[in-house]
Image (cartoon, rainbow, N blue to C red; front, side, top):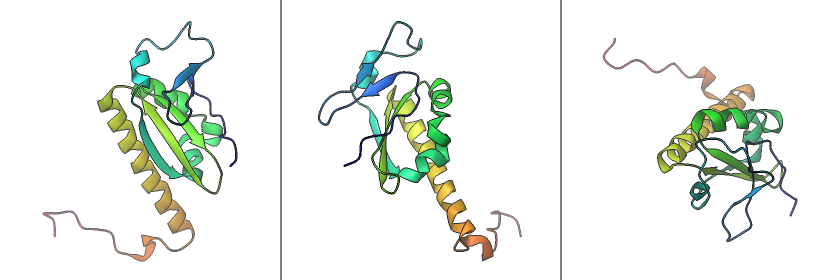
Length: 134
């Protein structure tokens, strides 16, 4: 199994199988909204590895911005560029849910873009009509 690629984040986290996440590095200046209990129950989102860079930019350059705006910490476990990735979302449960939905919606969007670029998408289908209008 290949090692996990490290993505830039506000706080570097480490998680071993079956253990709680641990903060790596210097925690002298964590974000004001960060509480260590948020590490106890991260929400996991699994998707194709290529979507991580499609959503968060090359090398995950947009992850720190997403973390700041959403008051969550994101930890990406990416084993193989051709395989799957796991994103752990640490934060308040309702923020975890929002960020999870955001990631899944962006994943669907990027899958559609890929399908359209290969000519297999819905580009030839008619646009849906608005309800209540004829």
